[in-house]
Image 1 (tube, one colour):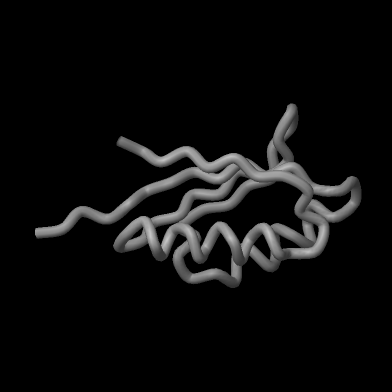
Image 2 (image 1 turned 30 degrees about the vertical axis):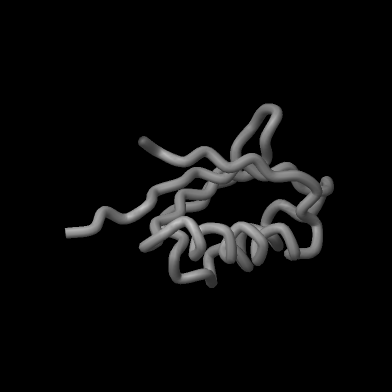
Length: 77
């Protein structure tokens, strides 16, 4: 039995793009949760995928969303 990869992606976005970016992230089926946050990071995203290759493709897709400036990915152990 293989275990899914769970990761949290922290996003910094351009001011005023928070809700637009959140709407686009919510359309990605592997995204289990996404919330706007206050502090250094603007959005927190929980992703669940079958393997690291799939995680990489989802993170790249998120980075290409207009307004996303920076990301940091944390993979759960």
